[in-house]
Image (cartoon, rainbow, N blue to C red; front, side):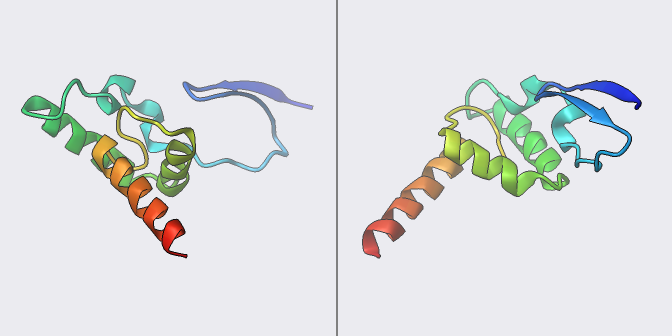
Length: 100
């Protein structure tokens, strides 16, 4: 059996030739600092927009966002959203749950 070690910034895994191909996140080849701007004004706004553009071309965007919401990520761009957008999503979700 041919085993190869696949290492990314996100996980370590052993794969075989028989293993199904898993989608690779679009951010895997980007500088991780792109997704963690300092601040939310001036140059950071451009950096946030660039990070979101990477997210928009990613097939894993929705699962990335859901993971960030589940982990309560408070910093950075995850699943095409910034910190304020994730806070708003959580508030909206909480209001919907309380109304039901």
